[in-house]
Each structure stands twice: as C-alpha cells, then as structure tokens.
Image 1 (cartoon, rainbow, N blue to C red):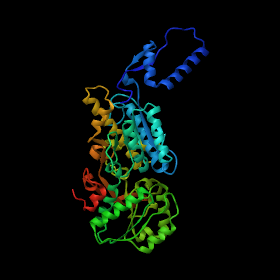
Image 2: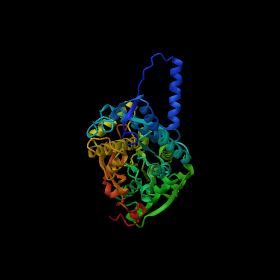
Image 3: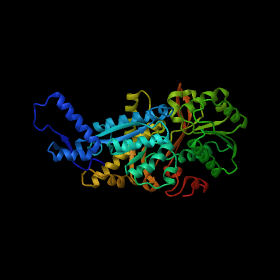
Image 4: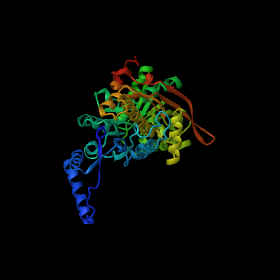
Length: 459
C-alpha cells in the first residue's frame, strides 16, 4: 500500500544537547514547513541523507485508512452514525486482536490500522473535494466509505484517476458497476436491485392473491430505482398486476397526508416503500392512525433500521427488509454474536444494516490484504497485490458469506431476507421469514439488473 512497501524512518536527535527551547521550537517549525512544501516521502529521504534518521520496521507504522460516512445531516442518524460506530468498534477490536476467526490476527496482517474519519455530508462536488484531500494530503493507504449513490458514483472515477483502493460499504445503485469498469473500486454490500426483486418474490409467495400494488418512494434516484425494480419484478412474476398509484414525494418532506389519501383511495393490496430514516418513521406514524397498514400490506425494504426506534408501533403483518441478511435477520454465527453483543454494549442499541455493511467492508478489505500478504511470502503487499486478491474474493462476515461475484469480481452479493412483524409479549418479533440465495436475487455477472428483470430472471 502507499507508504507501506518502503522503510519508514523516525527522526532522532543528532548530538547537540545545549539547544535552547526557543531554538528547538524554531527548528521543529522549520522542519514541519519544509515537510509540507516538499512532501512527506521526499522529506524523509532528505533527513536520511543528512543522517538524522534511523530505520523503524514498517509493521510498527499504522496503515492509515480513510473512512467516509454521514456524520451530519438527515443521513447521519439512521445510517451514517451506525456506520461510524461499526468502524470504530472494528478498528479497535482488530488492533487488539479480539475479533473471532478468521480475523483474529491483529490489524491488517500484523500492521496496526488507523482511521481517518471524514463527513460525507454536502454536495457531490464537496464529497469529491474531500476525497481528493483525503488521498493527497493525509497519507492514507485506502478509503472505505460512502452511503449516497450520488457520492459513490462521483468518487469512483476519481479513485481511478488517483489510483487508490476505494471500498464502497453501503451505496446501493446498481449503476456503479453496470455502467462502468473499475480497477481500484470495490463494493462489498449487495446493490439495491436484490431488495426489490426479493420483495416481489416474497409478495407473490406470501400473498398470491394480491392483484393491485402501489408505491410511495422518495423522489430521487434511490426511490425511483427501487420502485422501478419492484414494479418490473411484480410484472415479471404476475403480468396482470395492476398499479393503482406511484407516489414520489420530495426527499425529507416529512408530511405525507395527501400521499396517504391517494394510497387509501386506490385500495391496493400491497404498498411498496423504500423510505428510510426520518421519512420512514414519519410515514409510519402518520399512516397507522389512518389504518393504511390495516387496509393494505406494506413492504418496507429498509424497515430494519427503524425497528429499534418504533418497536411495536409498527403494525403486525408489515413486511420488513434489511438490505441483506443483516440486523434482525443476521445469522447465528460467531462473528455475529461478537459484533452484535459488542455493538449493543458499547452503543446501547442493536446494530442496523448500515453498521453491518461497514463491518463487512472492513473485514473484506482485511481478508484481501492478508490474502495478498500470504501470496507475497509474508511481505507487506503493494496496492496491486491487494486489488488482485480482492477481485472475486469470498469472505466471512457477521451476515454470512459475501462473494465478490459481479462487476468483474468487484461487486459483492449476499442472500436477501424478508419477514413479517408480529408483537409478542410487548416485543416486536419477525415471522414468516424467507431467505433467498444470492443467485436468486442478483443478476448474472455482465447482465444489467433492468434487463435481467425484464427477461423473467433468466440465468
């Protein structure tokens, strides 16, 4: 990785013990200015040549990893902060060597890791500027981040330009690898097509007599794509299906009285929504008193993130998704038992899907790094070696196995899970849980999601 395949040097005192404090301060200040002007790597070699440096083993110097997630704005609470929490937890545990097998070795292959945290909030141009600063000024070796589809689409070509390994942990748009080919960009979370495909399959299996569907989704790329894929999947499974309405309110509008009235007037059997965060919570709290959930079965493809906040206020029979086998649907394996218990103890709440997405990105990157190091005979791998090891990799996570199977080995796939809510003893539980294998809900490699759905899910 950048700065880790060479010897790193530490500055030592070269003799004079009578330096006065002021002179020492001025000397240090001058060195810092010179380092900024000439660049860190050239600065180290100049000091080496002057005899001011002694070698330090590379494994003692942390690998600096940029982590980008929403720390402010509407996306922070439901997804950004849980992502940050998971990153903090994972970095601490990996450096301490307390993560269960197969990740029990400290850091990345024995090298400690250091997080450089950046806020994703702001325009896409600001996101790109922050990315450039992270890479060019902060001496990071790789980047893990991005929730917004706009962010990941904007950053990906810059990663190629700057030639820096960038692992997308959450962004959902299938276009990332369906519209372009990248060397330096990977995404360890499944893209969003599987959410809607699995939702349609679940509806057909659990509600075979449903003939009328409707949607309420936010009016931007995420909501538009989610509804498009759900409607197309329902038509592929039941060509005679009728769409009563597709409501597309403005993102973060928070008031949905007119949309709820239109949904009620259409009397659909099923209502699809990819709402998230405060919009989802507001919709549920406004729709329940008007009996929308009693008259129609509502599918919430990202509903897992609000389970902790709303609990039994979510009506029985609501169909819930978690953008994969995450959260309430995560398997009972050692990694999940460690992650869930440690997260709850540290942050006082269960981890939602965004936290699972972050930890699987970090563990996947560690797996690729260590595979590359092993192939290099135990030497610290360079970036190209890590990329080669990452491509097509399968690795274990708290959510089960992730396979880098799409996008020429750069896009992960996982199973998808849906279930129905049911209050039992004053607590929210999930019933009628159905798991779909990754290959059932993701297109074959090289086939665009939209074309695959229209083909009737041909393999």
